[in-house]
Length: 289
Length: 310
Image 1 (cartoon, each protein chain N blue to C red):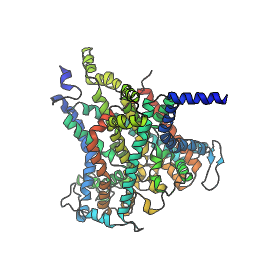
Image 2 (image 1 turned 60 degrees about the vertical axis):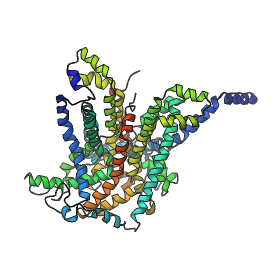
Image 3 (image 1 turned 30 degrees about the vertical axis):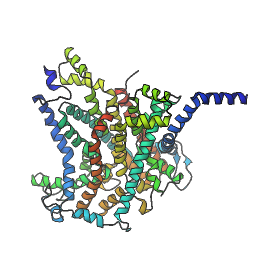
Image 4 (image 1 turned 90 degrees about the vertical axis):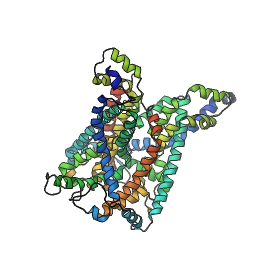
């Protein structure tokens, strides 16, 4: 019967799946080839970067673009390691604090009963479509008036409220049966204990997902460094790489830009590959009802 | 009177009601404060500023709807380029990208797990590349001299005799922006749809075939989409947000704001141009409000299509 051969999530190969491969494989190539090209560009020696016609893949790979990148300090003379250090601190703090805030809020919005609950949920749901860049100017005014201008914390504080993160975590906590929480309460557990001993261990996939999303947006962020920070020693690694790739001349800089891009991209890719099953698990609870 | 109230208070606290309320407050407060400061207040401020004249140095002066009137009647760049560009870009990248990501997700669900994991990773990868690197990748590919890969390829095939300045020419910039935006648009919304399709109840499909569903198209329309409406809505909202967040791509690719002959000028660039380059904050705020209204309009449609009525 037609259903067996073509059902969702089939366990074995069937001729009828060929037509899907015919579309999916070219699409995947279109998605991946630009990335492959740029990776190979990062390892090309200078003569290959200048070659005509350009080759897609590198012939004699070299690390020269990476070492050039390390040696090029910005015109202010601050070493690259300083920017890297800043970004590592920013990203770690950002991920940890976001996870903490979204879990406690998600727990309250999912398992507690109070008057404004539904109102708050729908406000957050509306904020899912919040586009930060649209209100960059009023946001700037808020930041300046809070005295956060040129303060290291401006990398973190304005970005901590993450409607998508809260939404995903809250949806995931909804899956925990109320009876478990009730039982813990009868045993005398307070909210803190319920959170750390029951909720957090059960929502690990959602936490992993939010951690990845936060990591991706923080690690590559340049907005705070461009808009709010004047002191060069407090700017982020992504900002530094961005200025380098913009100021170098197009071809000699192409290898370095590619190397810089690769450094930005690899951590994202590795973390996602490691945690991808957790992410897929979370996404199946992501629906907006 | 006061004593009564105090007794009631102590009573409530002992029962746990008040203690519970206090802990709810503590749990929600940090997020609520951050949300208000950096999401709600900026939005409200944008609306207020849009009704004023504000040049950063002097205190804002009430100007009524003047900014909006100027947008509609005097800003020829906005009317001739920015608005049509924004709508064209948003319609192709938003709904277009969304339909494409659903089709990809659906096809991925029809194949086995092993190849599916690899192909989904490939399709998801560009969305992890991030804004800066996306610019680097596509600037390198579309480089305007013979070292640019696409130029070299076209020259080798004999389609052009000399390199084309793709990123500086008004007729190519917009199509390239759309391709790049579609390329990087398969993010968590796409993953949510893959998960949603895979989660569907198998018995539903069996029952539908017994009831006389004849082909895959009917299956998608009558079973797959209705059974994953929540994920469809999440995907739609993510598509809308992604579309407008990626609005800076034209400036990143061409390296200038305004973009060559305003060909890739989107409303986001226009806001930056007026806000951060000309310091006409009130006017920029009016443009922000118009953008927020466009986004709101798009999501209204998404909710109409997919929200579950109760």
